[in-house]
Length: 177
Image (cartoon, rainbow, N blue to C red; front, side, top):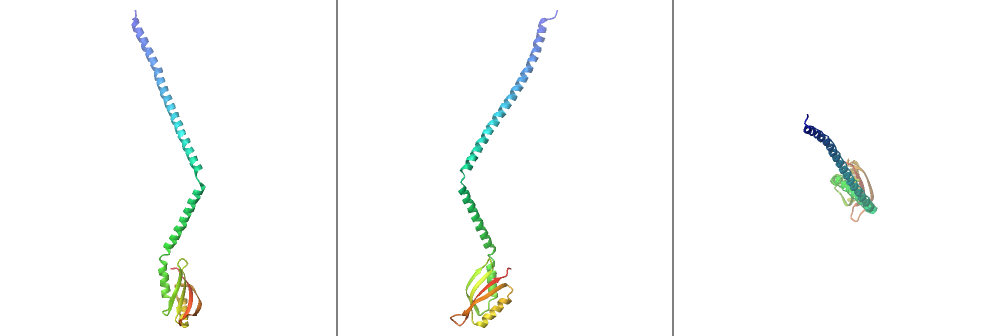
């Protein structure tokens, strides 16, 4: 006769194997559930942070004052204009030397200048001068006509001054080098 005790052991052994399978499945299902819940909570918290940040940005935009922005833009434009002026001054800084050399080369020894206005940007010179007499003034005009550095000139306000001399005013435009 078979041993009943052995049969019961085999029977209980088969039940233990069957009972392990639902334990593994429930453990895996529980892990998946924890991962899904953890992901949902994480995304919910991230969403709340984004909503809060969007509210802060909206509040900051609402608090902006248009006048302050306009003032800032005006200041930036003003600085841009000043920068352009400084750029022009820097670029034309070497030109006065060339203008003075052109005046010196184109001046008769008997002619002197008492007053001058020089516009470096336009390369225009307006001077009041004295010539010792009228023939020297005519010779000065001839020098201006023959000078390669002078693009154009006008002589006006010719007259006699207190001392025996001829006064005049000349406006010259110097050629670009």
